[in-house]
Length: 452
Image (tube, rainbow, N blue to C red):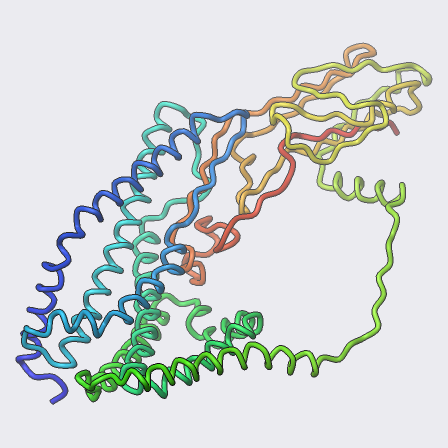
């Protein structure tokens, strides 16, 4: 039998001992966790209260993705310390299987605990935002909150975490079984990966596309669980036949270290030269293009192609007359100036084309109005502010009134790696990029006036 009854008892006892011996770290876990919650809440609340513009935004990073990228570091440390940790517990009855499975279960529990901790922090943030919105009706969430997605996303991230750990533990088992030979091979492979990092980043998603691009949530779990079981089974088989009590020859260790260093240096130095020798160079030339006045006009025309138009009849006003202009929340530019972007106060609309109102030539004043738009990772914060523009003629004076509702938009994503599934698409649950954030647009409205 692969496992006997006594091994299950050993696993249970070793797991209990591990958590008891680590109990001295528990207070620090709660202290650090409490500090993170308090600090993140302080940033959130102050960010909402200290808004300087009528339309304000607060971008909260997706810590679940951060966990997914930084958890492997912790896993690698535990794999490196596996032999040392096992020696500390060697007084207890155990086998190769029970030692490894105990280590696996420990990291599984820790991983689940960290993800549960992030879920709690996310829900606390959500609760605080909802509480503040009862006192201030201009607070909005830029992304929808779906509790079904929160539960599913938790298990998706947990599955990805277990797969990453399974691969790291498999590598650790190989190194423990064939330590000297495996160390040399892995050194060469890692060096090649580092040298060709750009290509690895390009091709790795293609290799893993069967999993990371799987659109069905159910099929994803079937694939992921199957892959996880296969990797874990291979790890257990290798570990079962590993002898841990072999004496370690320091001379051999030094030789292996020297060989690994030579291989790493050779790969890092030789590979780029080999790649460069196989590159075909082409004659290329760069040319500078002047930005012509016509080019600027075309750009402005394209910018205002999405603008709303208001037409006001002025046929009763004699040509050559001057039209005065006034209104609320307007910022008038010079007669010939044009603006197409501004990060200044969002309560103003920038008015261009005033020169056309001098010595009137035409029967109709056309007001092209481009509402403000500003996207934070694909979330347009101005859709919550309802910008409005009205225009009318009062005698020989053009009146334009611009108004915008106050809005504080919180962009608070979570479980970004679960964006691949069809069931969650088109529900406004994700930001544009899984890593970092992008922003752009105009924080103010733009008005362009001409006469035809």
